[in-house]
Image 1 (cartoon, rainbow, N blue to C red):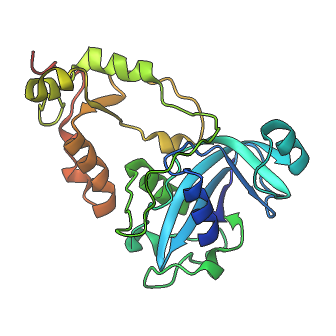
Image 2 (cartoon, helix red, strand yellow; image 1 turned 180 degrees about the vertical axis):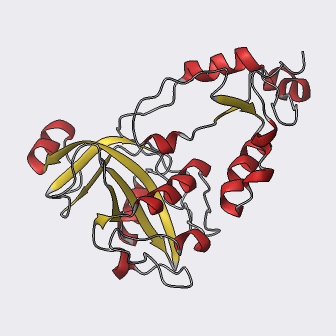
Length: 267
């Protein structure tokens, strides 16, 4: 059974990643001095802090644990650390805030909370790498699935050009195309059709929602059925589906009205 781990990136490291243009890039590697117990198949959740807010940078499913020499031989220059974890990850977000309601529920495997009773983050509490309890990993997966990003209003650099090499980890585009062929491009909840509203600009545009979140698979491959395992949604309904997890109102989630097979709407 895989272990879920916590790693903390200090504010200075977050600033370094911002300067490198890492926000929005696939998360494929992290480095540190405290990874001696991490093995391939484990999952690492990287957290950070902005003021008193807890940040969730991303999740990495570990394929390999490399020492410094092996890492430099394969990837060239990078962060200097005893061990490097390489694998498949989520998109990296440097300003993804974990709500205080969720943050107060997060626990290490030892039972120690990650934040104080008010949900405020403290770098000293987060600093040590260590295993998370399974329920806390599930909560973080829900935040990642929603991909909520709260961006500060000031101090954001723009206009510079950055070059960064990385491996891309993508969802299967063929599944999305198959879902649109099966269900059509109209939202299966409200019936909104982007092409009908926006003309050729909206042709073929829709969002595909996995009824079983990819975050819950912990890196395991899954054969997904385009007929029964995904739903075609507009952007509004897609956001409301994921908001249900945060407000504890799953009964009223829009996805509850979707049935399969679903008749093609529109056209």
